[in-house]
Length: 84
Image (cartoon, rainbow, N blue to C red; front, side):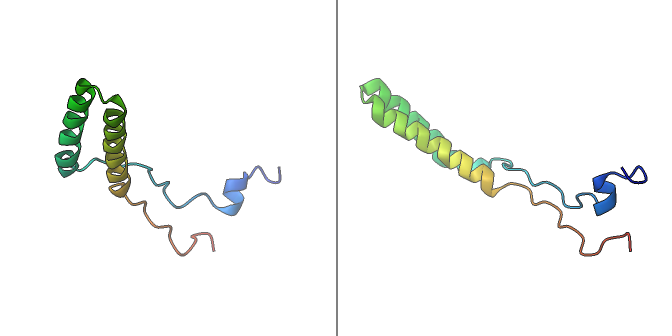
């Protein structure tokens, strides 16, 4: 190494914060998910297991999309580097 400097020290470290993939689930999402899960339970109890599994997967998909849409925004990288 030249002068004991690392690659990140030479080229500047990562200034942008890594964005999270998922955020908090909106409580209003539960207005759609909880009835869907209860219907899935009733349908599975009634003997139509495939439809119950599909409803459970759909409700998990709704929660995943909601958590993805509510992920926190990363701080934007600064336009100017401080080592000029």
